[in-house]
Amino acid sequence: MSFNIVRYKDYHKDDILAVWEQSVKATHHFLLESDFEEYKKILRNFDFNDLDVFCLEKNEKIVGFIGIHSEKIEMLFLSPDYIGKGLGRQLTDFAFTSFDINYVDVNEQNPKATEFYEKIGFETFDRTEKDDMGRPYPILKMKLKK
Image (cartoon, rainbow, N blue to C red):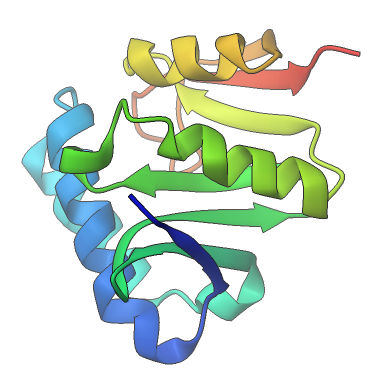
């Protein structure tokens, strides 16, 4: 399988929103439907150009993406069919090579994501009871082990 990583352009937005929605439905079973819909609405209005976003393409179809700001991975999502195939690692390796990445926040209720980040060298250094929107989804704040 051949994959390309390309910088986000505005015409990618619908595709990455579709990837986000499929990925969250497959991995974030703890989310209330009303919260999911609220996050979806926020992302629809979000300017992805505010982050360094890169899309993972297979045959010119977006199957995943990563968003980086400063030293932090802000988002990493893959289409469910591509989860567990080393592609998250491909995106994070690209981010490590291209940016000075040291941090990521992970939903505590998404243990597979936590396990993934631990496997690539992150460790939890803090925990919040609520997410950035004040909702009851605990966040693990992780940093890269030095």
